[in-house]
Length: 42
Image (cartoon, rainbow, N blue to C red; front, side):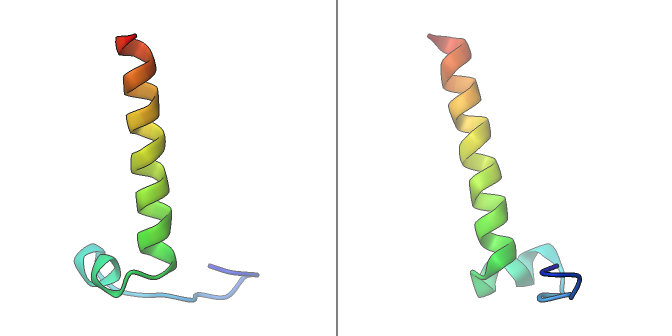
C-alpha cells in the first residue's frame, strides 16, 4: 500500500518476479535478519 492505495497485488512468487515494491520490502527484511544473525555470531 502507498498512501492508502494498493499498488501491487498477487502471490508471493509473482510479486517477487516483478521486482517491485514488494520485492524491495522482502529483500530489506531479509537483509535486516542477516545483519541480526551476524551480530549474534560475533
